[in-house]
Amino acid sequence: MPKQSFLNKLKKEGKLTLAEPSEEICMSYLEKSENCLKAAKILLENKLYENSVSSSYYAMYNVLIALLFRTGIKCENHSASILLLKEIFHNDKLFKIISFAKEERIDKQYYVTSQKNVELTKDSAQDMIHRAEEFTIGLKLSIKSINHDMVQLIRKEFEKKY
Image (cartoon, rainbow, N blue to C red; front, side, top):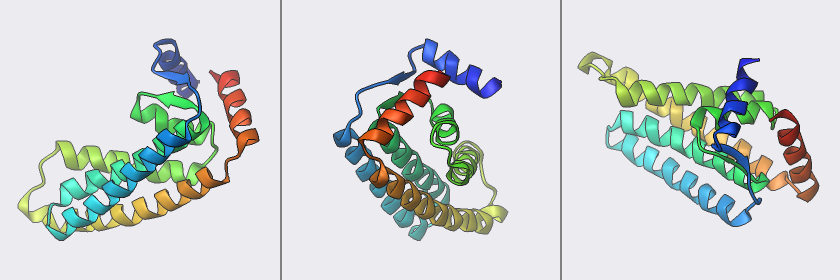
């Protein structure tokens, strides 16, 4: 199974580990997420569309990292963090949203947009902000619902799989 071997490889390299669950670190990443979403909106208003797309993605990624720290999972790889959302937290809907957002961020951050495609990029930026809002609300609700017993179950599943 390629997904598990990728995650197992990262675990062997020490880039995917169990850590002490931290409410404090979780809250810090939630704040970072909110700031990224605010930045995405400001960048959109100022016609900095590629940067807005990137900030929307980081709003999603930071709330995902908040979830991981809430449960005591430390991951140093974007793709693996996203994969854990599906494999450990079993949230296919949000997995698809952030997977799409990651691809959009890469596309907008690393490739030049021609003048003809500016309107398309504006639409992309608006769409990404909408997706980021949906994603962050969904994960914040998940984080709030996690109790001590759930943390233990998630950690056991993580240890069993990796």
